[in-house]
Image 1: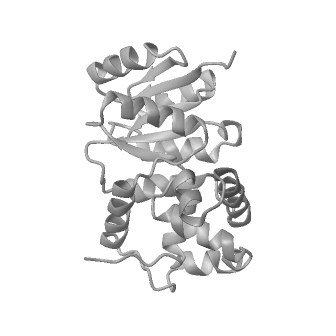
Image 2 (image 1 turned 90 degrees about the vertical axis):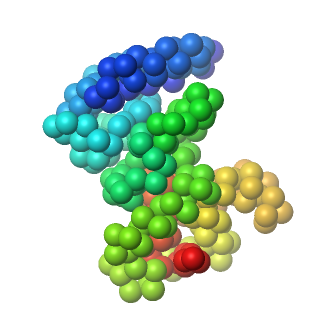
Length: 231
């Protein structure tokens, strides 16, 4: 029998945590292993409970969710902990920093219960929570923060050599991942199997030194490989 997904709730609103707990604990394949009211407590509990997924509110008093995510991502012992950022709106001013810090993705607090549960399962499986709508928002936020898509920003210099190591197919898959497509959607687009797509994604992650799929998206944007249409 597959072990239940261990979920840690980090939000300064007790009522919201209670609602999440009831929802998560109602599922046979997951369980809440702890609740944190701020980022510092979330990091402590991530270490003690070895949670698989942390639902992390970005804005909390004291140590905020962004700082806590950086701390979790920087700890080698917590390499298997996946952070899902919870935002008031799907497009949040800290979304880009969250993904750079190592978050697996983000979810609006107004999401439907099924969306939240699916997000936990997706994150626990090592995938990225970046829907096409969220990806579009990420692009807009990146540009608003002074991001560059001309291939001349700091990201481009950092990843230029690594990008050169990608095969033509791996680059093609990376562009589609950055567009918010799932493995199944990419497989359909390229007329290959989802397993083949997953192999290309994993190889791209290894060559680019990406922690997960979400960081692949950020690298694609910052390197200038992806040049979105700006309306």
